[in-house]
Image (cartoon, rainbow, N blue to C red; front, side):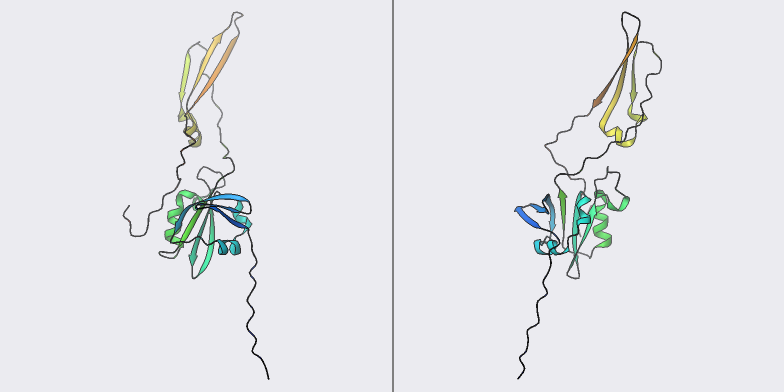
Length: 195
């Protein structure tokens, strides 16, 4: 007499350690992420643990979307980051959701809490035009587009001391930003919503 043997369940190996700390805060392998969007309950802790790949660690945002009962991931960078290309800038998230995801699918967006600093690109300042002792103001048209956001203008003042030596003082006037207010660098238009 033969006994029917129950099929063995496949043991699923965890690819990542995911811990839910609060309603919208998780850690993946010790790195903190905010769940900034959870459309139709797309975030599933167990599935993220099974499917996560450490290649995603380098991105500022991680998007998980569901298709045919499978979870897939896509990484995005802040727009200003030099590593970002047109297809992985967070401002293009809506395009990705509309073009590459199943219509009306569940998805989630994770934002890394401690992102790597964004390198600022500086072009050399051309210096004063003529040493006349006047204050010269050069507007931000001489600066790279990313530089334009950070500095409103440069002021170069020429001073002569008692010995006749010329000294220059350059002041960078930065725009003040309030770091306590957090704004999203992307927007998501729900399917069926008018823009």
